Length: 128
Image (cartoon, rainbow, N blue to C red; front, side):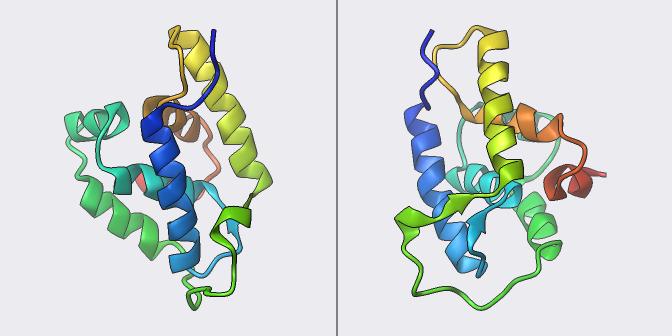
């Protein structure tokens, strides 16, 4: 079984790095990962959220209101931004979700599940 990321998730990672820079952060947090999924705007994760009656645009506003925004970073190389430890843990959990569901690659839904199963992050707390 392959544990690579889907093309959609590869796009999400591009958006994630842009979100980090836009919000003035130095490393990739769970909130950036989630904002990247929302920004991509498609995929199973988005369909699940919409199916639960959650508007991704409203959720983006809630998440961003819980983030301390700093000045945008222009001197940071987008490709050298590192993951925070908590985010690395979420990505490892997404591999487990992918395997549990028997999928061939890691998709947005696997990352969403991993995020929501972790009770102590800004995204999950924002759902309460």
